[in-house]
Amino acid sequence: MLRGFATITYFAEDLEAAKAWYAELLGLGPYFEVPGGYAEFRIGDHSQELGIIAGAWAPHEPRPGGAIAYWHVDDLDAAIERLTALGAKEYEPRKVRGEGFETASFTDPFGNVLGVMFNQHYLDVLAGEAK
Image 1 (cartoon, helix red, strand yellow):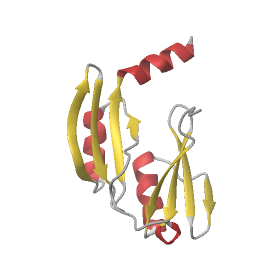
Image 2: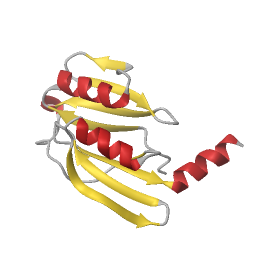
Image 3: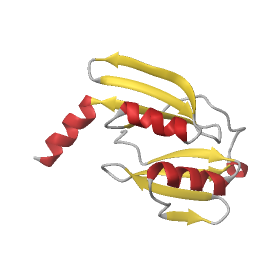
């Protein structure tokens, strides 16, 4: 039934500021936009979608919490340093989750939880796809 992430969305009261912040973090701008309400970036090895939704469109009061989506990063130290440099605040400190799995999570300047993870299994799956 569940086949993989199609789109992960975050809310931001200031959509323009969030678009600029994520463009800086990701090194690219959105590929799709709905003026005044939504911006979407394609990122990662499978062009996963990260959507930023205007806070006014949120079905609830935006706040950190709930599920945390962890994005694979090849260098967790560098990701933590970059997120911190861009103003993200630590939500959950770096933690070893098992052999080959380490995570950390942050709140972006807009109050969303952004997880980053070094995941050896992710790299193993990619290597298998390349064969």
